[in-house]
Image 1 (spheres, rainbow, N blue to C red):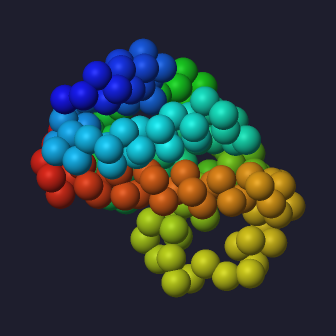
Image 2 (cartoon, rainbow, N blue to C red):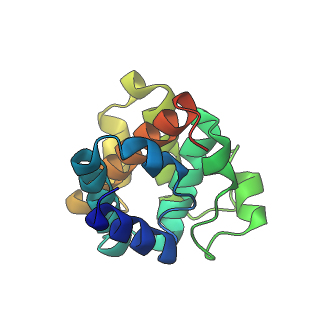
Length: 156
């Protein structure tokens, strides 16, 4: 494994962006691609327009759909507690309106993406800037792909 990839894994583990290095060890068979993936994750983790709590809720919502146990068990933010996680299965009043909109979008993104329409983007736009909505889509994409890849490759 290259020094750059090892350093990226160490940074990701320290920041809690990564809960395990096992998936990255599989990806390390393509070190430049793995490094690019980690750099994108790091960018969305450390320079996000979305707050940490929202990203963690969305990540866990997608993990519940992909059924990736490693993703479901990992906790990447102290801003989300066990009560929050217990409510993820519903459209709970436990969450703010903006969190509900993002969670609904993430659920559709991961399970019924063809159902996403203008009304969903209009709802998101009432809480988030265009840049934040774009980032939410990028984040959902990365979490969905990473969770599925981890599960399929049994890299947990």
